[in-house]
Structure formats: C-alpha cells, structure tokens
Image 1 (cartoon, rainbow over the protein chains, first blue to last red):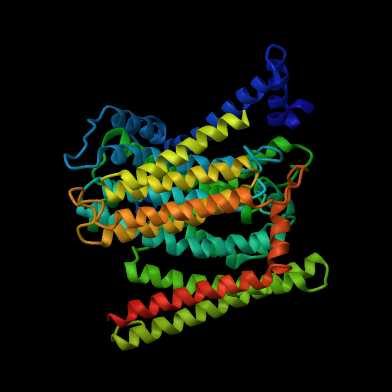
Image 2 (cartoon, rainbow over the protein chains, first blue to last red):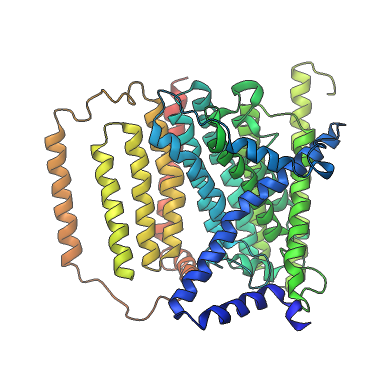
Length: 387
Length: 162
C-alpha cells in the first residue's frame, strides 16, 4: 500500500536499484536520463493523438455537430487513422526550396515543443530537471519556435509562406512581452524561478491571487501557440496555412505535432504557474495523486482554450498588435508594479496576497472600462450599431 | 568528459562562425549565426552559468538574430546568391578585424583574472539580482536608459518617413 502511495517515485527508485546491480553508476545515470528524455519527447506526440480528437469533438459540439464518430467508439481512433494517412503520403519538396533549411525546419519546431517538457513538474519530485532558471528557460525555448517558423516560411520559396512567417514573428515577439511580464509577477511573489518551487509555494492557487496575470498569460499563450482568435499565422482563408503551406506528409505532421505539443505545454505551464500544479486534496498523504490532479487541471485549461477557439472570430493584424501593446503590456506592467509594492509591505503573507488580489481586480476593472469606452468611441465614429 | 564536450561545442561554434562569413547565401549566414549563438550558450552551460546561457538564447537567438533575419529579408536583392559576398573593402575590414582580435587576445591573456576556487553556488541568480539593484545599480540603470534612448530614436527615425 505504501508503495502505491508514492507509486511513480517508488517505481523510479526500484528501477534504479534494479539496473544498478549490473551497471556502473554513470551508466545508470545515462540510462535513466535517456528513459526520462524519451518519455518527455513523446509528450507532444501523445498530445497530438489525444488532443486532436478532443478538439474536434469540443469544437464540433460548440458548432452543433457531433465531430468524428466513425473510427472506433465515439471516433477515438480518428487521430490514429490520420497519423497513418500522414505517414503514407508523398513527400513533396518545392523545386526552388532551400532544401537543407526546408528539411531542418520541421525538426527544429518539434525540438522547441519537446524541450519545454524538461522543466514541467508532474508531481512532487517528478520533474525532468528542476532548473534554477525554469521559468526563464520556458521563455527562451519559445524563441527556437520563432527561428523554426521563419526557416520554414523562407525556405518554402512561397509568398504565402513568407507572409505567414512575417506574421508569426510579429505576433510571437509582441506577445512574448505580456507573457514574460505575467510570469515575472509569479516569480516575484514566489521568489524563485524553479517550477517545482513555484508549485510548492502555492498554498492558494495563484489564479486567486493574481487573476490578471493568469488572464494575460492565457491570452498571450493562445497567441504564442497561434490558435484562434490569434491564428493569423495560419489563417486558412487568407494565406492558406501560412508558413507550412508547402509541407506534406510527415513533415507537415511535425508541424501539427508541434502545434498540439505547444498547446499541451502552455496549458501545463499555466497549470504549474497559476492553478497550483499537482497540488490537491490528499496529495501530501498520497503523492501519486499529484500527476492526476495535474492532468485534470491541464485538460480544463485546454478545454477553455478550445472554447475560445470555437467561439471567437479572428483578429485583424493591427487589432492583434494593438491589443498586445496597448492593453496587455500596460495592464501587466501596472500589475507587476503593484505586486512589487505589495511584496515590500511589512505584513503577513495572507494580507499581502489579499492586497495583490484587490490590485489585480482593480486593474482588470480599469482595463475593461477603458476598453469599453474605446469601443464606444470607435462605434460612434464609424456610425456602427451597439454604440 | 567536460573537456571533450567543451572541444566539441567550441569546434561547432567556430565552424558555424566560419560558415557565417563564407556562406554564399546571406540568409544561410544568419542561420549559421544562430547556431553559433547556441554553441556559445552551450559553453555557458559547461561553465555552470545557466542564467547566462538562457539569456544568451533569449536575447541573441530570440531577438537579435530575428532582427538580422528581418533586415536581410526586407532588403531588396540581398538574398540573391549570385550577388558577390565581398566588395573592394574586404581587405581593410579584414585587417581591422584581425587587429581587434589581436587586441582582445592580448587583453584576455595578459589580464590576471580573479579566480575563485570554490564550486559555483547554486543560487547565483539570486546573487546576480541583488548585485543589479545593489553595487551595480548605476551601470544597470545607465544601460536601461541607453536602450530606451535607442528605442525612442528608432521610433522617431521610422516615423519621419511617413
């Protein structure tokens, strides 16, 4: 029974003792790192196989359809059928493409999606590598995606691909700033960038302390993963899938995998930073429950992102950039300033956190009021209804 | 083991750097430059300077390399591989670059660096943060003001064209 309680950590320990009977210590390390590495690298693939099905079902229900329902019960094997289709498709490389760069881009975008998993804590002591700079590492890995997208867009030698790549870079660079600022507020409250430490510090989930930071992070993450309403980089109706227009078969599949891997990763990071990660009832007595809470919370975040995708129209590019620079950045800067001030007040932690909550709610209120006034002015100026 | 990894990473970085200046295609040069930046980040990791490594990737790969790529993409005719990579001034420029290298090598080898024998403490980043708002607050703020001035200047230059 005690074994089951901390099942995952005990399993890892038994495995390590079992292989160290025949292997020198350095080989044990190599084998263990390899196993953990392979598991973490598989995360984007697992995400694709499960989340595509979930997304189709959720969006289908939102749009009053039933979604996939032919392959297996409730269509759950649809993703596998799609994967097989992807594998047997012809691999086409455009004549004037820059071939090495064209072939490297899908690999690099997958690397960016897989590396994120190294610092995400699935439970207490269940993390690939609890880097002391975890939060910063997450942001830095995001820049690999930008490089890969730009490589894909440029190497395809296609106008739509290049336009898509330009849009991606404008969008990723703009939304990186509110994302970093909202993560910085969490780091400021906790005082560490360790992802494990951030979870340990959340006696109350930070969504109840820093709701503004959570909202900003979620919006910025939606933009970073290029999902609707920020899907200008793919925008099927304008630039027909954008930067990966020329890719086919498995190379297209890598982009697809990276997209869903990133969706799962940003939801997992949102869970870690704001929803208390693996924390939940009875988790200190039964640590094996941690990963389950973690997965449940992550799926809830993913569901919210799908909900947004199913119900909102696409932004125009100037609206998108304006929203980042005129709304999200000032709001998160004000939040950062307030949290830094509240942190300095000589009071017990609950009081400080309560002050932060009040400041957050006030900033949300001010931002929404200003947005509403701007919308009214815009509507009055252009003679639109609803002014 | 560390030595072998260092040699491999250093060779990779230097090879990428050589490709930056010899590649026929300017866009490829930019991509090789990104690889060189990653190599430098790898050397920082080997030196237990995780924060520097991540910052290197965040700023050099994420921002500076992207700016270079944008400048190349938006400049007419720059991506044509038929364009000559060197103009008449390459000798002068090469000479100055060599001179700079000699000066830097001289400074690096002649200076006596302060070396601490003890292992790197695990919370270097906290120490770094304290130093930025403590003893080094003036240089830190001066650098921030410089960046703001550069940013405002860039905006004004871009605005005047309209």
